[in-house]
Image (cartoon, rainbow, N blue to C red; front, top):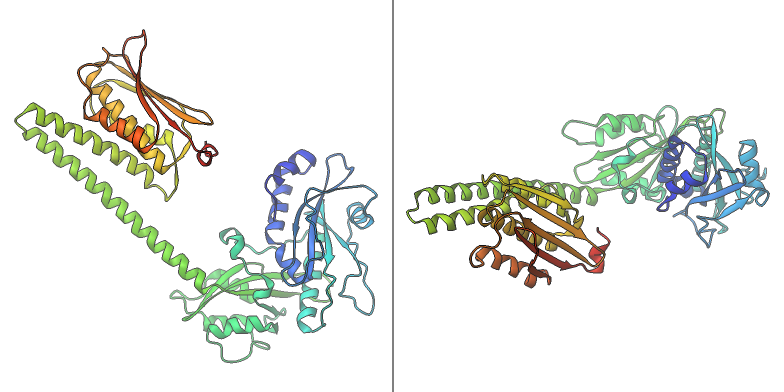
Length: 484
Protein backbone atom coordinates (compact mmCIF):
# COMPACT_ATOMS: atom_id res chain seq x y z
CA UNK A 1 0.00 0.00 0.00
CA UNK A 2 1.07 3.60 -0.45
CA UNK A 3 2.80 4.98 2.59
CA UNK A 4 1.54 8.30 4.05
CA UNK A 5 2.98 11.24 2.13
CA UNK A 6 3.95 9.25 -0.98
CA UNK A 7 1.88 11.52 -3.22
CA UNK A 8 3.88 14.45 -1.89
CA UNK A 9 7.12 12.55 -2.53
CA UNK A 10 6.03 11.88 -6.11
CA UNK A 11 5.23 15.56 -6.59
CA UNK A 12 8.53 16.73 -5.16
CA UNK A 13 10.96 14.15 -6.53
CA UNK A 14 9.47 13.19 -9.89
CA UNK A 15 8.04 14.90 -12.93
CA UNK A 16 4.92 12.73 -12.93
CA UNK A 17 1.70 14.54 -13.78
CA UNK A 18 -1.32 14.34 -11.42
CA UNK A 19 -3.09 11.76 -13.65
CA UNK A 20 0.04 9.56 -13.50
CA UNK A 21 0.16 9.83 -9.69
CA UNK A 22 -3.53 8.89 -9.55
CA UNK A 23 -2.84 5.94 -11.85
CA UNK A 24 -0.06 4.67 -9.59
CA UNK A 25 -2.36 5.03 -6.58
CA UNK A 26 -4.95 2.83 -8.31
CA UNK A 27 -2.25 0.31 -9.20
CA UNK A 28 -1.03 0.02 -5.62
CA UNK A 29 -4.59 -0.19 -4.28
CA UNK A 30 -5.14 -3.33 -6.36
CA UNK A 31 -1.76 -5.01 -6.79
CA UNK A 32 -2.02 -7.34 -3.78
CA UNK A 33 -3.80 -9.81 -6.09
CA UNK A 34 -0.78 -9.75 -8.42
CA UNK A 35 1.61 -10.47 -5.55
CA UNK A 36 -0.57 -13.39 -4.41
CA UNK A 37 -0.75 -14.88 -7.90
CA UNK A 38 3.00 -14.44 -8.44
CA UNK A 39 4.00 -15.90 -5.06
CA UNK A 40 6.22 -12.80 -4.91
CA UNK A 41 6.87 -9.55 -3.12
CA UNK A 42 6.43 -6.53 -5.37
CA UNK A 43 8.16 -3.14 -5.13
CA UNK A 44 7.14 -0.07 -7.13
CA UNK A 45 10.02 2.11 -8.30
CA UNK A 46 9.56 5.51 -9.96
CA UNK A 47 12.10 7.70 -11.79
CA UNK A 48 13.30 10.78 -9.90
CA UNK A 49 12.95 14.24 -11.37
CA UNK A 50 16.62 14.41 -12.42
CA UNK A 51 16.55 10.90 -13.94
CA UNK A 52 19.44 9.97 -11.70
CA UNK A 53 17.86 6.74 -10.62
CA UNK A 54 14.73 5.14 -9.21
CA UNK A 55 12.94 5.61 -5.87
CA UNK A 56 10.95 2.85 -4.14
CA UNK A 57 7.56 4.27 -3.15
CA UNK A 58 5.44 1.18 -2.37
CA UNK A 59 5.81 -2.49 -1.48
CA UNK A 60 3.44 -5.42 -1.05
CA UNK A 61 4.02 -8.95 0.23
CA UNK A 62 2.22 -12.03 -1.02
CA UNK A 63 -0.20 -13.82 1.31
CA UNK A 64 0.33 -17.06 -0.59
CA UNK A 65 4.06 -17.51 0.05
CA UNK A 66 6.84 -16.68 2.47
CA UNK A 67 8.26 -13.21 1.99
CA UNK A 68 11.46 -12.83 0.01
CA UNK A 69 12.22 -9.34 1.35
CA UNK A 70 13.08 -9.19 5.03
CA UNK A 71 13.24 -5.38 4.92
CA UNK A 72 10.84 -2.75 3.68
CA UNK A 73 12.43 -1.01 0.69
CA UNK A 74 10.06 1.98 0.63
CA UNK A 75 12.13 5.17 0.56
CA UNK A 76 15.21 3.43 -0.88
CA UNK A 77 16.99 5.15 -3.79
CA UNK A 78 18.61 3.09 -6.53
CA UNK A 79 21.06 5.24 -8.53
CA UNK A 80 21.44 4.49 -12.21
CA UNK A 81 23.82 1.58 -12.73
CA UNK A 82 23.22 -0.17 -9.41
CA UNK A 83 20.37 -2.48 -10.45
CA UNK A 84 20.71 -3.72 -14.03
CA UNK A 85 17.22 -5.28 -14.24
CA UNK A 86 15.50 -2.07 -13.08
CA UNK A 87 17.63 0.13 -15.33
CA UNK A 88 16.95 -2.01 -18.41
CA UNK A 89 13.20 -2.07 -17.82
CA UNK A 90 13.22 1.71 -17.35
CA UNK A 91 15.47 2.43 -20.35
CA UNK A 92 14.10 -0.05 -22.88
CA UNK A 93 10.50 -0.15 -21.68
CA UNK A 94 10.33 -3.95 -21.83
CA UNK A 95 10.06 -6.54 -19.09
CA UNK A 96 13.30 -8.05 -17.84
CA UNK A 97 12.13 -11.54 -16.88
CA UNK A 98 14.57 -14.34 -17.81
CA UNK A 99 13.09 -17.83 -17.57
CA UNK A 100 14.29 -21.38 -18.26
CA UNK A 101 12.85 -23.62 -20.97
CA UNK A 102 12.26 -26.40 -18.46
CA UNK A 103 10.18 -24.19 -16.15
CA UNK A 104 8.98 -21.14 -18.13
CA UNK A 105 6.65 -19.93 -15.36
CA UNK A 106 9.24 -19.80 -12.56
CA UNK A 107 11.39 -16.64 -12.16
CA UNK A 108 15.13 -17.30 -11.98
CA UNK A 109 15.87 -14.07 -10.11
CA UNK A 110 14.51 -10.58 -9.49
CA UNK A 111 12.35 -9.54 -12.45
CA UNK A 112 11.51 -6.00 -13.55
CA UNK A 113 8.36 -4.87 -15.38
CA UNK A 114 7.84 -1.34 -16.74
CA UNK A 115 4.65 0.45 -15.70
CA UNK A 116 2.94 2.40 -18.46
CA UNK A 117 0.08 4.87 -18.31
CA UNK A 118 -1.13 4.89 -21.87
CA UNK A 119 2.10 5.15 -23.86
CA UNK A 120 4.09 6.89 -21.13
CA UNK A 121 6.61 5.07 -18.93
CA UNK A 122 6.02 6.07 -15.28
CA UNK A 123 7.63 3.35 -13.16
CA UNK A 124 8.99 -0.15 -12.70
CA UNK A 125 7.62 -3.08 -10.70
CA UNK A 126 10.32 -5.34 -9.25
CA UNK A 127 9.17 -8.92 -8.65
CA UNK A 128 10.98 -10.75 -5.86
CA UNK A 129 9.83 -14.37 -6.05
CA UNK A 130 9.57 -16.37 -2.85
CA UNK A 131 12.54 -18.68 -2.28
CA UNK A 132 10.32 -21.27 -0.61
CA UNK A 133 9.94 -24.30 -2.86
CA UNK A 134 6.39 -25.39 -3.78
CA UNK A 135 5.02 -28.60 -5.20
CA UNK A 136 3.94 -27.69 -8.73
CA UNK A 137 0.29 -28.39 -9.47
CA UNK A 138 -2.65 -26.98 -11.39
CA UNK A 139 -3.28 -24.29 -8.77
CA UNK A 140 0.30 -23.04 -8.97
CA UNK A 141 0.20 -23.12 -12.77
CA UNK A 142 -3.04 -21.10 -12.95
CA UNK A 143 -1.70 -18.59 -10.43
CA UNK A 144 1.62 -18.08 -12.23
CA UNK A 145 0.03 -17.88 -15.70
CA UNK A 146 -2.41 -15.25 -14.43
CA UNK A 147 0.36 -13.26 -12.74
CA UNK A 148 2.40 -13.20 -15.95
CA UNK A 149 -0.63 -12.04 -17.90
CA UNK A 150 -1.43 -9.16 -15.55
CA UNK A 151 2.22 -8.04 -15.38
CA UNK A 152 2.31 -8.09 -19.19
CA UNK A 153 -0.82 -5.91 -19.29
CA UNK A 154 0.74 -3.45 -16.83
CA UNK A 155 3.90 -3.32 -18.98
CA UNK A 156 1.83 -2.54 -22.07
CA UNK A 157 -0.32 0.09 -20.38
CA UNK A 158 -3.50 -2.00 -20.68
CA UNK A 159 -6.26 -1.52 -18.03
CA UNK A 160 -6.61 -4.45 -15.66
CA UNK A 161 -7.77 -3.24 -12.22
CA UNK A 162 -11.40 -4.08 -11.35
CA UNK A 163 -13.93 -1.28 -11.69
CA UNK A 164 -15.96 -0.08 -8.68
CA UNK A 165 -13.19 -0.88 -6.20
CA UNK A 166 -13.67 2.57 -4.63
CA UNK A 167 -16.84 1.29 -2.95
CA UNK A 168 -14.94 -1.55 -1.24
CA UNK A 169 -12.58 -0.97 1.69
CA UNK A 170 -9.06 -2.25 1.11
CA UNK A 171 -9.34 -4.67 4.06
CA UNK A 172 -12.59 -6.07 2.57
CA UNK A 173 -11.23 -6.80 -0.88
CA UNK A 174 -10.83 -10.51 -1.70
CA UNK A 175 -7.36 -12.06 -1.80
CA UNK A 176 -6.38 -14.93 -4.05
CA UNK A 177 -6.31 -17.36 -1.13
CA UNK A 178 -10.04 -16.75 -0.52
CA UNK A 179 -10.84 -18.65 -3.71
CA UNK A 180 -10.16 -18.40 -7.45
CA UNK A 181 -12.08 -19.35 -10.58
CA UNK A 182 -10.86 -19.06 -14.16
CA UNK A 183 -13.17 -18.93 -17.17
CA UNK A 184 -12.30 -19.11 -20.86
CA UNK A 185 -13.42 -16.82 -23.69
CA UNK A 186 -16.77 -18.71 -23.84
CA UNK A 187 -17.47 -18.06 -20.17
CA UNK A 188 -16.88 -21.67 -19.17
CA UNK A 189 -15.07 -22.52 -15.93
CA UNK A 190 -11.81 -24.32 -16.64
CA UNK A 191 -10.41 -24.09 -13.11
CA UNK A 192 -11.83 -23.64 -9.60
CA UNK A 193 -9.76 -23.72 -6.42
CA UNK A 194 -11.01 -25.73 -3.42
CA UNK A 195 -11.88 -22.53 -1.50
CA UNK A 196 -13.87 -21.18 -4.46
CA UNK A 197 -15.81 -24.44 -4.67
CA UNK A 198 -16.55 -24.28 -0.94
CA UNK A 199 -17.84 -20.71 -1.32
CA UNK A 200 -20.26 -21.78 -4.05
CA UNK A 201 -21.35 -24.71 -1.91
CA UNK A 202 -22.53 -22.16 0.65
CA UNK A 203 -24.65 -20.59 -2.09
CA UNK A 204 -26.39 -23.94 -2.58
CA UNK A 205 -24.38 -25.45 -5.45
CA UNK A 206 -24.58 -29.25 -5.35
CA UNK A 207 -22.42 -30.07 -8.38
CA UNK A 208 -18.85 -29.25 -9.44
CA UNK A 209 -17.83 -25.93 -10.98
CA UNK A 210 -15.41 -26.98 -13.72
CA UNK A 211 -17.08 -27.26 -17.12
CA UNK A 212 -20.09 -25.11 -16.26
CA UNK A 213 -20.93 -21.74 -17.82
CA UNK A 214 -20.51 -19.26 -14.99
CA UNK A 215 -23.12 -16.64 -15.92
CA UNK A 216 -26.16 -18.98 -16.18
CA UNK A 217 -25.00 -20.75 -13.03
CA UNK A 218 -24.78 -17.50 -11.04
CA UNK A 219 -28.17 -16.34 -12.32
CA UNK A 220 -29.67 -19.50 -10.80
CA UNK A 221 -27.84 -19.12 -7.49
CA UNK A 222 -28.43 -15.40 -6.99
CA UNK A 223 -31.63 -14.78 -5.02
CA UNK A 224 -31.70 -10.98 -5.03
CA UNK A 225 -35.31 -9.70 -5.11
CA UNK A 226 -34.61 -7.67 -8.26
CA UNK A 227 -32.45 -10.38 -9.83
CA UNK A 228 -28.71 -10.27 -10.51
CA UNK A 229 -27.26 -6.77 -10.76
CA UNK A 230 -25.84 -5.41 -14.01
CA UNK A 231 -22.36 -5.47 -12.46
CA UNK A 232 -22.75 -9.15 -11.54
CA UNK A 233 -23.94 -9.97 -15.05
CA UNK A 234 -20.87 -8.27 -16.57
CA UNK A 235 -18.42 -9.84 -14.13
CA UNK A 236 -19.66 -13.39 -14.69
CA UNK A 237 -19.75 -13.18 -18.49
CA UNK A 238 -15.97 -12.77 -18.66
CA UNK A 239 -13.76 -10.28 -20.47
CA UNK A 240 -14.52 -7.61 -17.87
CA UNK A 241 -12.66 -6.44 -14.76
CA UNK A 242 -15.10 -5.55 -12.02
CA UNK A 243 -16.55 -6.44 -8.65
CA UNK A 244 -20.01 -7.57 -7.54
CA UNK A 245 -21.89 -9.66 -4.96
CA UNK A 246 -23.87 -12.88 -5.34
CA UNK A 247 -26.73 -12.92 -2.85
CA UNK A 248 -27.81 -16.42 -1.88
CA UNK A 249 -30.38 -17.45 0.69
CA UNK A 250 -27.73 -18.49 3.22
CA UNK A 251 -24.61 -16.63 2.08
CA UNK A 252 -23.26 -13.64 0.20
CA UNK A 253 -20.19 -14.06 -2.01
CA UNK A 254 -18.10 -11.20 -3.39
CA UNK A 255 -16.56 -11.72 -6.83
CA UNK A 256 -13.69 -9.60 -8.14
CA UNK A 257 -12.75 -10.27 -11.77
CA UNK A 258 -9.68 -9.45 -13.84
CA UNK A 259 -9.84 -9.93 -17.61
CA UNK A 260 -6.55 -11.30 -18.95
CA UNK A 261 -6.71 -9.72 -22.38
CA UNK A 262 -3.11 -10.01 -23.60
CA UNK A 263 -2.56 -10.37 -27.36
CA UNK A 264 -0.85 -13.60 -28.41
CA UNK A 265 -0.40 -14.64 -24.79
CA UNK A 266 -0.44 -18.33 -23.92
CA UNK A 267 -3.31 -17.79 -21.48
CA UNK A 268 -5.48 -16.28 -24.20
CA UNK A 269 -8.58 -14.24 -23.42
CA UNK A 270 -9.41 -15.65 -20.03
CA UNK A 271 -10.83 -14.07 -16.89
CA UNK A 272 -9.92 -14.88 -13.33
CA UNK A 273 -12.46 -14.32 -10.59
CA UNK A 274 -11.47 -14.12 -6.95
CA UNK A 275 -14.31 -15.07 -4.63
CA UNK A 276 -14.76 -14.30 -0.95
CA UNK A 277 -17.48 -15.21 1.52
CA UNK A 278 -18.67 -11.85 2.90
CA UNK A 279 -21.84 -13.10 4.59
CA UNK A 280 -20.82 -11.87 8.06
CA UNK A 281 -19.49 -8.57 6.72
CA UNK A 282 -22.68 -7.79 4.80
CA UNK A 283 -24.80 -8.71 7.83
CA UNK A 284 -22.79 -6.27 9.94
CA UNK A 285 -23.16 -3.57 7.28
CA UNK A 286 -26.93 -4.08 7.17
CA UNK A 287 -27.05 -3.88 10.97
CA UNK A 288 -25.06 -0.64 10.90
CA UNK A 289 -27.34 0.84 8.25
CA UNK A 290 -30.34 -0.11 10.36
CA UNK A 291 -28.77 1.49 13.42
CA UNK A 292 -27.91 4.64 11.48
CA UNK A 293 -31.50 4.89 10.25
CA UNK A 294 -32.72 4.45 13.83
CA UNK A 295 -30.31 7.12 15.10
CA UNK A 296 -31.47 9.54 12.39
CA UNK A 297 -35.09 8.93 13.37
CA UNK A 298 -34.27 9.45 17.06
CA UNK A 299 -32.42 12.68 16.25
CA UNK A 300 -35.39 13.88 14.22
CA UNK A 301 -37.77 13.16 17.08
CA UNK A 302 -35.48 14.81 19.63
CA UNK A 303 -35.36 17.93 17.46
CA UNK A 304 -39.16 17.97 17.15
CA UNK A 305 -39.57 17.43 20.89
CA UNK A 306 -37.19 20.28 21.72
CA UNK A 307 -39.16 22.55 19.40
CA UNK A 308 -42.41 21.48 21.06
CA UNK A 309 -41.02 22.11 24.55
CA UNK A 310 -39.84 25.54 23.42
CA UNK A 311 -43.27 26.33 22.02
CA UNK A 312 -44.97 25.23 25.26
CA UNK A 313 -42.63 27.42 27.31
CA UNK A 314 -43.36 30.37 25.01
CA UNK A 315 -47.11 29.87 25.43
CA UNK A 316 -46.73 29.51 29.20
CA UNK A 317 -44.61 32.66 29.38
CA UNK A 318 -47.30 34.68 27.59
CA UNK A 319 -49.91 33.51 30.08
CA UNK A 320 -47.74 34.07 33.15
CA UNK A 321 -48.98 36.84 35.45
CA UNK A 322 -45.73 37.70 37.22
CA UNK A 323 -42.71 39.16 35.42
CA UNK A 324 -40.34 36.98 37.42
CA UNK A 325 -42.10 33.88 36.08
CA UNK A 326 -41.98 35.19 32.52
CA UNK A 327 -38.23 35.87 32.85
CA UNK A 328 -37.58 32.37 34.20
CA UNK A 329 -39.53 30.77 31.36
CA UNK A 330 -37.72 32.99 28.84
CA UNK A 331 -34.36 31.87 30.24
CA UNK A 332 -35.47 28.23 29.93
CA UNK A 333 -36.45 28.88 26.30
CA UNK A 334 -33.01 30.30 25.59
CA UNK A 335 -31.26 27.28 27.08
CA UNK A 336 -33.41 24.84 25.13
CA UNK A 337 -32.74 26.84 21.94
CA UNK A 338 -29.00 26.53 22.63
CA UNK A 339 -29.33 22.78 23.26
CA UNK A 340 -31.34 22.46 20.03
CA UNK A 341 -28.67 24.36 18.05
CA UNK A 342 -25.92 22.14 19.45
CA UNK A 343 -27.99 19.02 18.78
CA UNK A 344 -28.43 20.07 15.12
CA UNK A 345 -24.66 20.20 14.67
CA UNK A 346 -23.99 16.92 16.47
CA UNK A 347 -26.78 15.02 14.68
CA UNK A 348 -25.33 15.61 11.22
CA UNK A 349 -22.96 12.69 11.64
CA UNK A 350 -21.87 10.15 14.23
CA UNK A 351 -18.59 11.70 15.37
CA UNK A 352 -16.40 11.78 18.45
CA UNK A 353 -14.93 15.19 17.61
CA UNK A 354 -16.77 18.33 16.61
CA UNK A 355 -15.89 21.71 15.10
CA UNK A 356 -16.06 24.33 17.87
CA UNK A 357 -16.47 27.12 15.32
CA UNK A 358 -19.53 25.47 13.80
CA UNK A 359 -21.05 25.01 17.25
CA UNK A 360 -20.37 28.66 18.13
CA UNK A 361 -21.87 29.90 14.87
CA UNK A 362 -25.02 27.87 15.53
CA UNK A 363 -25.29 29.55 18.94
CA UNK A 364 -24.93 32.95 17.28
CA UNK A 365 -27.78 32.11 14.91
CA UNK A 366 -29.93 31.02 17.86
CA UNK A 367 -29.06 34.25 19.71
CA UNK A 368 -30.24 36.30 16.75
CA UNK A 369 -33.72 34.93 17.39
CA UNK A 370 -33.90 36.63 20.80
CA UNK A 371 -34.81 39.89 19.05
CA UNK A 372 -32.57 42.31 20.98
CA UNK A 373 -31.17 43.96 17.87
CA UNK A 374 -27.57 43.47 19.05
CA UNK A 375 -24.92 42.05 16.70
CA UNK A 376 -23.03 38.92 17.76
CA UNK A 377 -19.73 38.11 16.03
CA UNK A 378 -17.11 35.36 16.32
CA UNK A 379 -13.38 35.98 15.95
CA UNK A 380 -10.62 33.36 15.97
CA UNK A 381 -10.97 29.60 15.75
CA UNK A 382 -11.24 26.71 18.22
CA UNK A 383 -10.74 23.86 15.76
CA UNK A 384 -11.79 20.29 16.52
CA UNK A 385 -12.51 19.14 20.06
CA UNK A 386 -13.95 15.95 21.57
CA UNK A 387 -17.68 16.22 22.18
CA UNK A 388 -17.12 15.84 25.93
CA UNK A 389 -15.27 19.18 25.86
CA UNK A 390 -17.04 20.93 23.00
CA UNK A 391 -20.58 20.61 24.38
CA UNK A 392 -19.93 22.11 27.87
CA UNK A 393 -17.84 24.83 26.20
CA UNK A 394 -20.64 25.65 23.74
CA UNK A 395 -23.23 25.77 26.53
CA UNK A 396 -20.98 28.11 28.51
CA UNK A 397 -20.57 30.42 25.52
CA UNK A 398 -24.32 30.38 24.99
CA UNK A 399 -24.96 31.39 28.61
CA UNK A 400 -22.45 34.27 28.40
CA UNK A 401 -23.92 35.54 25.13
CA UNK A 402 -27.44 35.37 26.51
CA UNK A 403 -26.33 37.14 29.67
CA UNK A 404 -24.78 39.94 27.61
CA UNK A 405 -27.85 40.26 25.41
CA UNK A 406 -30.14 40.44 28.42
CA UNK A 407 -28.21 42.67 30.79
CA UNK A 408 -25.49 44.68 29.02
CA UNK A 409 -27.72 46.94 26.91
CA UNK A 410 -24.94 46.96 24.32
CA UNK A 411 -25.31 46.60 20.55
CA UNK A 412 -22.19 44.51 19.83
CA UNK A 413 -21.09 41.24 21.39
CA UNK A 414 -17.90 39.51 20.28
CA UNK A 415 -16.80 35.94 20.89
CA UNK A 416 -13.01 35.79 20.65
CA UNK A 417 -11.59 32.23 20.56
CA UNK A 418 -7.85 31.64 20.71
CA UNK A 419 -6.23 28.20 20.82
CA UNK A 420 -2.67 27.31 21.73
CA UNK A 421 -0.95 23.97 22.18
CA UNK A 422 -1.86 23.84 25.85
CA UNK A 423 -5.18 25.64 26.23
CA UNK A 424 -8.21 27.20 24.62
CA UNK A 425 -9.29 30.69 25.70
CA UNK A 426 -12.67 32.18 24.85
CA UNK A 427 -13.55 35.80 25.75
CA UNK A 428 -17.13 37.07 25.39
CA UNK A 429 -17.14 40.88 25.35
CA UNK A 430 -20.00 43.36 25.11
CA UNK A 431 -19.87 47.15 24.63
CA UNK A 432 -22.68 47.81 27.05
CA UNK A 433 -22.95 49.41 30.48
CA UNK A 434 -21.00 46.71 32.26
CA UNK A 435 -22.00 44.11 34.83
CA UNK A 436 -25.34 45.08 36.36
CA UNK A 437 -26.71 43.50 39.51
CA UNK A 438 -25.74 40.22 41.14
CA UNK A 439 -24.63 37.18 39.11
CA UNK A 440 -27.61 35.06 38.15
CA UNK A 441 -28.25 31.40 37.43
CA UNK A 442 -26.62 31.59 34.00
CA UNK A 443 -23.24 32.60 35.37
CA UNK A 444 -23.47 29.90 38.02
CA UNK A 445 -24.07 27.37 35.26
CA UNK A 446 -20.99 28.65 33.40
CA UNK A 447 -18.88 28.35 36.54
CA UNK A 448 -20.01 24.75 37.11
CA UNK A 449 -19.45 23.74 33.49
CA UNK A 450 -16.03 25.35 33.14
CA UNK A 451 -14.52 24.63 36.55
CA UNK A 452 -16.09 21.29 37.48
CA UNK A 453 -16.49 19.61 34.09
CA UNK A 454 -13.70 21.13 32.00
CA UNK A 455 -11.18 21.70 34.83
CA UNK A 456 -10.72 25.23 33.55
CA UNK A 457 -11.05 28.81 34.82
CA UNK A 458 -13.81 31.41 34.49
CA UNK A 459 -13.38 35.08 35.35
CA UNK A 460 -14.36 38.62 34.45
CA UNK A 461 -11.54 40.72 33.00
CA UNK A 462 -10.93 44.29 34.07
CA UNK A 463 -10.55 46.85 31.28
CA UNK A 464 -10.64 50.60 30.71
CA UNK A 465 -12.93 50.02 27.74
CA UNK A 466 -16.70 50.14 28.25
CA UNK A 467 -18.58 46.91 28.64
CA UNK A 468 -17.85 43.55 30.19
CA UNK A 469 -15.41 40.80 29.24
CA UNK A 470 -15.95 37.26 30.53
CA UNK A 471 -13.09 34.82 29.93
CA UNK A 472 -13.08 31.03 29.81
CA UNK A 473 -9.81 29.11 29.68
CA UNK A 474 -9.66 25.33 29.52
CA UNK A 475 -6.58 23.07 29.42
CA UNK A 476 -6.06 20.74 26.47
CA UNK A 477 -4.68 17.25 26.96
CA UNK A 478 -2.07 15.88 24.56
CA UNK A 479 -4.66 13.73 22.83
CA UNK A 480 -6.73 16.87 22.17
CA UNK A 481 -3.85 19.07 21.02
CA UNK A 482 -3.37 17.09 17.80
CA UNK A 483 -6.99 17.74 16.77
CA UNK A 484 -6.48 21.46 16.44
